[in-house]
Length: 286
Image (cartoon, rainbow, N blue to C red):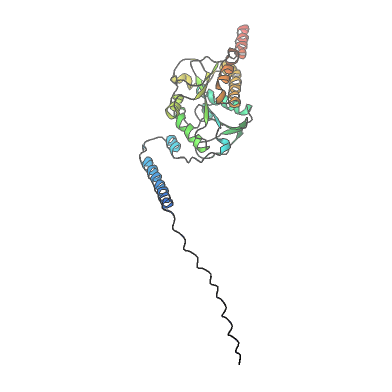
């Protein structure tokens, strides 16, 4: 009797078990460890610097040091700041020491700059405008004129522009009324506001000087302009505002062109027509 052979058993297919994940390479482990250590080291250095600050510094200096500094967007990396020196408050508006502020506000109006909301304490009443595709800021006085340097640093940090190139607009008793001068650098010339800026940023910054004439005394610089001086100052303020706009349009990169234009006698010496006409009228009346 023929017997059929038994059917072969089906082959079992067994999927291979996944290989265990390989541990990170030694170099990667070292990199991760180094990054963690670097972060801890930076945090430790920050704590050390913070505790080393002088407890007796002024409020403005303290804000300049402690205000957060957000990373500026790429499109604002080349921003410009025009900073008018003076003392804060309406009571100081007509003082000779606030001539820089007056010219700055005229420039803001000339350039149609708009008022910004305060980004943080220390950057009040800032106006902004885009000139030649570059963000520009008009910064009025932020405190006492003798603390102009820390106030400027605090405001730049608040705006996210700690490295912005700055034009300081300032009164100058060495220049007669009716005269302006643009300088790419120089000394403070005995001006406490400029001395404060130089202590904070060094002397290599641009400055637009507005002549106020007179004697080198506190009573003179904090005194109000006379009525005759006010009338004469109208043309000076307008010419100073034009100089600021030119600096913003050409930029610090072309400062030599700006200097050549602004310091020409027919530009920087403003005829005091109003003052002379008033004097002539008084003489005729007498």
